[in-house]
Each structure stands twice: as structure tokens, then as C-alpha cells.
Amino acid sequence: MNIPMLLLHPHQHFLKGFLKTPPRHYHFIFHSSAHLRSGIPCAQPFKALGLHCTKWMLLSNGLRRKLCAPATLKDHTEGLSDKEQRFVDKLYTGLTQGQRACLAEAITLVESTHNRKKELAQVLLQKVLVHHREQEQLNKGKPLAFRVGLSGPPGAGKSSFIEYFGKMLTERGHKISVLAVDPSSCASGGSLLGDKTRMIELSKDMNAYIRPSPTSGTLGGVTRTTNEAILLCEGGGYDMILIETVGVGQSEFAVADMVDMFVLLLPPAGGDELQGIKRGIIEMADLVAITKSDGDLIVPARRIQAEYVSALKLLRKRSEVWSPKVIRISAKTGEGITEMWDKMKEFQDLMLASGELAAKRRKQQKVWMWNLIQENVLEHFKTHPLVREQIPLLERKVLSGSLSPGLAADLLLNTFKNRE
Image (cartoon, rainbow, N blue to C red; front, side, top):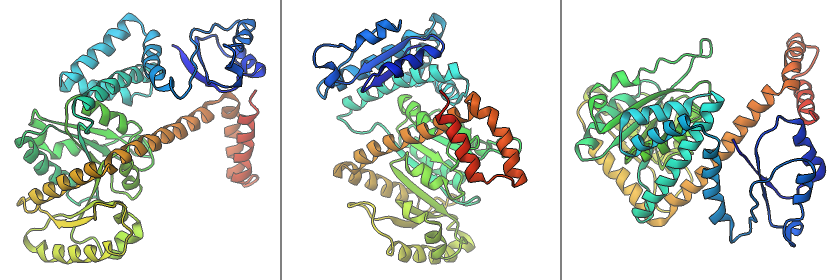
């Protein structure tokens, strides 16, 4: 498979380093600079080193957009075997035709940690992304789906709310996808994945798709591939994406970087308004819903609603056109859920009209790119042969107290930096 590389200033010593690695097919991209003013003189060092350059691109401001996107998809597909190409095409065709089985298989593929399957997943995602952009252009540039993040403490009634809310939306002609994230055990690595069992009626609905996923140790309770799963669901024709996360504190910040609207569900006996401010979660919410507002809990729910309304007045506004609202709902009686949907549509319309929604999505893509870079760099660091050899020795010294954690970290980082 090709490895596209952007070289701002190709250097002889840098190029020689590639000869130490196993022979692969590299795709070098040169930025327009002083080295390239008279054609491409820097091609000579590659020929002298025995490296074959298949394509040359001048990434000037005028050509970057036209050249990069088509080349990326072609480069990804060139290294596939016929069987792999048929597999990716089958998933892509089934996905865009709305087949739930193909959507499930596609999400399984992007969740895989197998190196080859990760490469196939990127090919599929690139094809879906092209399709997604084409559909958005046909939709006059408007987003194809409304992405909503749901979070709250355990026992807040998230699954019960999604069951009622999802059935209401499918009856109104919407296609809804629920990505439910479950925490993985630190001891065994397993997850219960039981959210689907509490959405019995919704799981039977052909216009709804529920996908439980393990966190697999990811900080924040959001899986590494949740963003990719959102893209696949939108490619499958779902216009409402709900991401239910583990309400443990960090998940609210992680999910806020991948959704259009963040909804916080709180039980009526969750403490005073200071608890929300201390956790720093309330400031991330676009809508706060006090659940279980029925029977004997109506009075506590009204009190908590009033407390959070006053608490929100102390926080700085994050949007010029929207102020967070606090409402009471009941998944048992249905009270307030229609009003909640009206508030959500109002939020979407205001954010779209002001341009804030488009700006928010662009920023989220950048944030998620850097999150993936950090994760992959750490994985590359831990699996590097020289570093892997030193880790057990330094860990033992840290555990025995003969070496400080900071010094051990510096030694490992220096080993990694001086690996050549």
C-alpha cells in the first residue's frame, strides 16, 4: 500500500533513513518552495538512492484542493487485492442502500485493531466521505443528520428516554441511529453491552439502529472510532444520530467534540446546583433535562429545575444565538418529551442560520484529528523495539523507588528520539 508523505524540504540524510526500513511503495509529495522553482531538481537524490517516485505534486494554494482528495482515495485503493476490493465495495454499496447488516459490518471493521483491517476501514471511510459530501451538496450544503450527545449519571434514565424518544421520531418519519458506549472492565477488558436489552421496542423498529460499543479503555468513555461510526450511520441514511455515553465525568467533554448538541440528563435527586458547576459539566450542556418527573418525584424535579436555571445564569454563554434551557421530562408518562424535541429543532435551526453549526463541525474535525494523532503516536512509542525493551526494566526501578517516574519517562523519550 502506498504511503503518502508531504516533504517540505527533502534532505539527503532524511532520504537515506528510508533505506533502513523494509522496502515499500512510497508516495512523495513536495510542497512548492525554493527547491521547486525550476521544475523538480530534488528528484535526483531519489533516483540516486534507488527510490521510485510515482507522482509529483506542487501543493500551491491553487492546486492543493483539486489534487489532494482524488489522489488520496486512489492511493488507498491501489494496494488492495481483488477480494479486498470486492469486500469494501460490497460494504459501501449495502451501506449507501440502507442495509443495516452492512452498516453493522462496516462499524465492526472500523472498530477492529487488526492492522490490515484498519487499512481497509480507511478505504471504506474515504469512499463514504466522498458520498457524504456529494449528498450534502445535493442538500444545499445543509448537514444530512442532526448529531446529539446524551450523557448523565448512572440511573438517570438515559436508555428509557431513548426508547420513548426514538419511537416518537421514527413514527414521524425519521431514521434514528443510537451509538451506546459501555465502559470496559480494567480487569478483564470486557463490557456488558446491555443498553440494547433496555430498548426492546426501539430495537425492533426497522427505522432505528442501535449499536452498543465498548470503550476499550479509552479515556472519557467514548470509543476511538465513535466519530467514524457517526459518519457511517449518516452514509446509511440515518438523519438522527444519538450518542449515549458513560456519565463518569470525562465523557461529557469527549462527546461534546463530536456532536451538534449536547444534552445532559439528570435525575431529580442529584444534589444541588453547585454539584453541576463543580463538575464543570453543566457548562458543556446545550440542554439540561430533569428526568423521572412523575409521581412523587414531580416536586423534587421542579426544585432541581429551578436550581439549575439559576445556576446557568452564572455561566458564560458559549453561543451568540442560544442560551441553554432546563426542562422536565418523563419517559414513563411522556411529559415534556415533545417540548424537548421542539427545543432541539429550535437549536438546530438557530445554529444553522447563524453559521455556528458549520464552524463547530469544522473545529471538531480538527480536534478529532489531533486526538487520533496523540493516540497513534503513543501506540507507536510503546511498540517501538528499543522502547519496548527498556519499559520492563524502568518500570521495576520506578516500583522499587530507585528511579523517579519523571526521570524514567525522560529516559524512555530520549531512547525514542535517538532511535536512529
